[in-house]
Structures are given as C-alpha cells and as structure tokens.
Length: 289
Image 1 (spheres, rainbow, N blue to C red):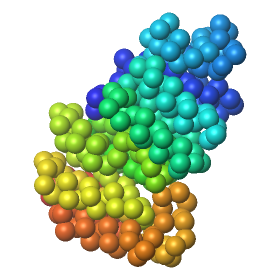
Image 2 (image 1 turned 90 degrees about the vertical axis):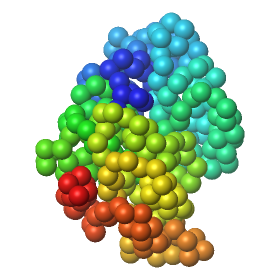
Image 3 (image 1 turned 30 degrees about the vertical axis):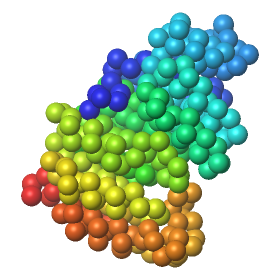
Image 4 (image 1 turned 135 degrees about the vertical axis):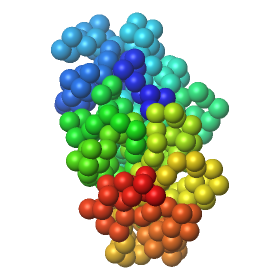
C-alpha cells in the first residue's frame, strides 16, 4: 500500500541526536529518500551528505520534503509535530515515547481540519516493504506482498512480520500506530485505507489491553470490511489497574480487558490468534477461510 509511504516519499528527520542519526542512516540504507534534517542553529550545514535546516518549512521549501519522522525528546515533541503540520507536511511519523498526554490533547486539537496525517507517537513507524521505511523497524525481516499489518506494539509488529515472511507471505504496508492513550491515526482509519487498497488482500491487526479501540474496530470490520482480518490481543494475564508497557495499556474501571476485546473480535467474525506464536498461521488461516 503506497497510499501513505512509497519510494517517491521525501523524508525530513526532526531531531538529529544520536538516535535520529542512527535511524536516518538505517532508513536511507533501506532505500528511503532521506532528503533533509532539522536541527535549529545548524541550518546550512550537513550530516553525511544530508542537508540540515533550521526549520521544517525550510526543508519543505528547499528539499521538497513531504514526510517527517520525529525523534525529538518528549518536552519538545508536540511542538515538532505542530511545526511539521504548519509547514505542510502530509505524513508525520512521531517515534518519541513519553510525550505528556496534556501536550497530545493540544496536538490533537491543532491537527483538526488540517491535511496532515499523524502516525504515533510512541510508535515504530511505517514501512512499505521494498520501497521505503520511516522509523525504527528492522527492514530486513519484511517482504513485499499483499498483507497489511496494523499494530499498537512495535515488538508485536516485528514478530508478526517475521512469521509472515517465514511463511512466504509478504506485506503491502506495516504501520505501528503507537500505544499511548492519545494518538493520531487509529485502527479504523487504516482499516479503511487497506479495505480500499487494490494492493492489499488481507489485514493483521495487533492490539492490547486498555481503551476500546479494538472493540470499535471490530464493529467497523463487521459492518464494512470486505477483506479477511486476523487479530491478536496482548495482555490476557494483566491485572486491573496496572499499566503494562505502553501508557495506554491499562485496564481501568473493569473495561479494556483482553477477554472483552477478543470476544468482540470473534463476534465480528475475525480469527484471533491464541498466542503471539500463532499470529502468522492465524492470518494464513483467515485468508484461506
């Protein structure tokens, strides 16, 4: 699915610390057009041939950037997202973990009505195998194909993709949406895109405890999805009231349990993997069935 990211995408890196440099190089080595970086005060210089600008607007104007990937530390990450949108960036991918929820409330309101799409925060990014990747995922485990992957968890994304690749099943696009309580693009947004994408035949959806996103997605799938969807929900043994890994992975008020979500998905007709080791085989079974 090249709707979000393709070989033609031109990417600017916001946050050029050691992490940003490491992953800029990794994305470029994969074949992504990493056309610019932003580091205030360093405009006019470069890093390993990549021009550095003081602002995202300059990166858009002079390098033609249309995608941004953000590694800015939590205190400044929300401002970085809004700066990218203000500059006209169409796809903003925020890797940063630990952004205060109050800051993301402001970002959510700021992005309303704007043409920018936010992936994340607290996510591994997005990859269209064989074309481009933006983020921190290991490119070598991916294989170009026709299965879409949507996940709250980076680690589960890698596990799912590795299993699919080992089974000879390639991926059209893999997107980590992030595990924070407030994110940009959610399950339903991407299910809709995959449903309409002629290059995707099936979808694997990976969720976890906390919130109701998976339950809402189950209802949408039952009413609208024309392609097979397999799922996995992490956190079956998680105790109520204790955050498990992601900031949004917490059972609150008895809601958002794994059992509740699995029941909703199965009621919608989805095949749900019983364990992480069965994600790939469950997706293959859903495609056959």
